[in-house]
Each structure stands twice: as C-alpha cells, then as structure tokens.
View 1 (tube, rainbow, N blue to C red):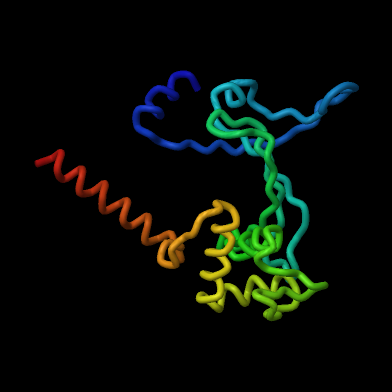
View 2: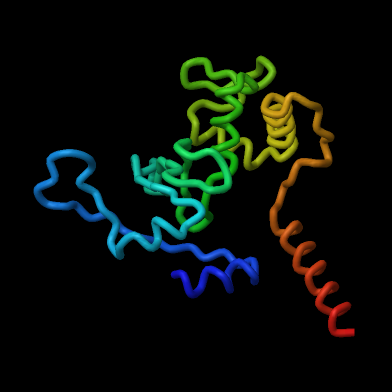
Length: 184
C-alpha cells in the first residue's frame, strides 16, 4: 500500500477496495468482526464505508442497504444513510430524494399516501418514486424545494441536474482540450 499511495495521489486517481467481514472465535469484549488482510487498508484509506443489507425490495427489484461512514479523513465520520440499490440501474436517485423530501416536510406523508403541495400523487413509497421518475417536471420542483430546505437559499430551476452523463461528457471534453493544449 505505501508503495502505491504516492503515485495515486499524484495521478489524482481513486482506488476502491472491497473487503469482507469475518468473525473471530472467542472474542469476549468488543466486536468479533474483523476484516481480512491486516491493517494496511484501515491505515491508508481516506474513507471507509460499512455497507450492510437491510432488506430485499418488493418484486426482488433491488436491496435496501444501510451505509455507515466508519472512517473519513475528508469529512465528518460516523454518519449513516439508508438507500436503495436497484438491480440493473444502481442507486435509486428518486427514492433517496423522496425520503429526503418527506424528512424535510416538502412531501407530506398521510398514511401510505404521498402528497405534494396538498395534492396526493401516489400510494406507497415504490409508486411515489415511480411517479417522480415518470413526471420530470414534478421531480424537478421537489428537488428544488429539497435543495432550498437543505441550503436555506433559493436555487434556480435550471440548476437541477437531470442526467449526470452530460456533466461527465463536459468533464471529458475539458480534459481532452487540456491534453490537446499540452501536446501543441
């Protein structure tokens, strides 16, 4: 690990290691869980995330996981988040936004019904997330209200990011332009 950390830092590269938990036999005090491979990953890592599956989503469409920041050199540690990982598409962005909106009071939950601006739009969390996916205008407004509630300042309607691929393409084009300038 110590041999590659310098070159990784200079190249501004991110390396992700996946590790498993094992149980020690005969541990009386403390946690019996231990990661394989020694202490090098624990010492050299900047962020360590403990990810645990909580439940399987309806219709076997994905899993709900609880992620806890065990170690962080770049932000505050020991924060937890629960999110859905959908098979075939990754982290459920609309489901996470719906959870944040209901916690912040942007979207009201009345029993199993979800309401936005006093109007019911879906029954059940899965249907509400599906409705937000199909209705981009409403999803943009909910996202804007959530950002206002989190930041405390007004956000322009055109600042919401609908698709991350355009941002990635812009970044790639910028890097290609910089490389071309260096070569010339």
